Image (cartoon, rainbow, N blue to C red):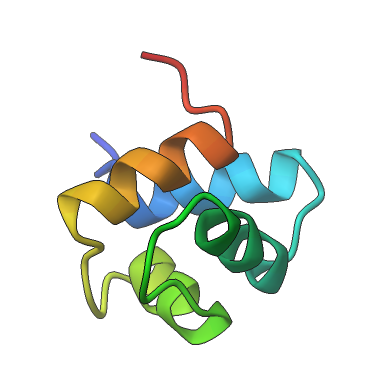
Length: 68
């Protein structure tokens, strides 16, 4: 049985591995000049309720060190 890997599941796994809260991730994204990143937005992304913009995703990937 295959498991679906989503943007949100990867983001959440990396955030938890780094022992960060969604608020800390949002603050780090905002500190890098990306608008619209709030704790609630990160939560939406992780749950798949909404998707981040391409720019938000690129910055989030840097923040949680998603390997290329």
